[in-house]
Length: 366
Image (tube, rainbow, N blue to C red; front, side, top):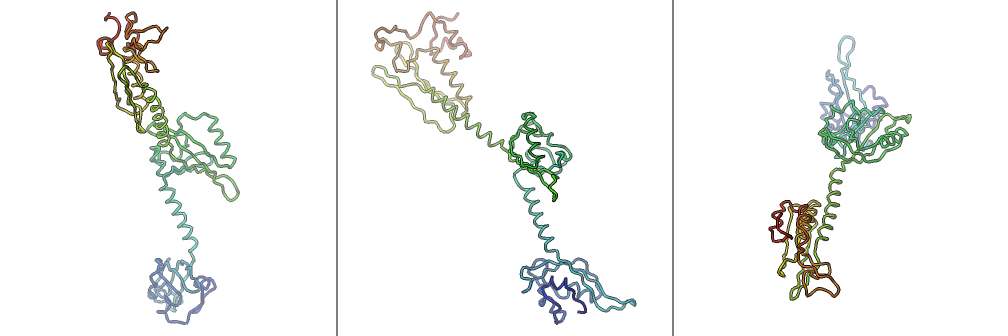
């Protein structure tokens, strides 16, 4: 070799090796880009240039005792001819692209992470114009990237936030601070969804804000679950309040119990005093396990008890003589002077059925 400059010495970790061309691969530690396969000596750019070939941007990985971590080089070669066109040798140019490839790899990993994350990401300029959205945003909002490009997030406005909320957000961002908060937006379909946002101002080397990056988590499912849990707990409390006390009558004790699962609200039992010393027992179930089912049971209980004589909370039967206390006015099982209609018509749709049912109502049909 006639010339071996300092740049290639640093890249290879060594100077010219006094070995034949066939030994260059082993002497310098030259590999294909897979970093494992030795580079074929006859395909080396300088060797090909010496044969009169031109080579452009061949990748060579170098790893030897002096360069144990390895470097990636881009090599080009061309023949060295005199003015008469006579071939005298070859010239090879090398460029170290190790740092460049590492940066490119980091950017590719970052891009893949942004594209594949479950959080929805939006990048805007300083005016709020949307420049980028990831697939998670498209899936959540229903808008494609092309449909929102060039627009502002105002496109998603639901009307659930007041102007002061947006003013606080912009004041925080324009001050160069990170904004964190929750917001309710509207999908392309019109459906509302909740998000917890973290919006970060991006700055250049001079400290000027150039972009805003918003990362959001969809809270809709969590809020639905929380609302459902609250409703189920409330329904369970309603259900438990419907349970009657133990009823004690001469020769008879009547008691019941419920053992609700987590999903409560549609189960009900009761016992009702009827004429002739009879006792009515109600066991009912409404399809569904939420507050609506519990409220149906409340209405059912009110309708049934409005047409029957109910024991008081002490377990005494107001309609039974043997349980009357001195000084207490005795009430019969039904009062003939109280019409059924005011008590039943709101709870039972069919008033005639109420009057003719097993739960007798006072007075003949009018």
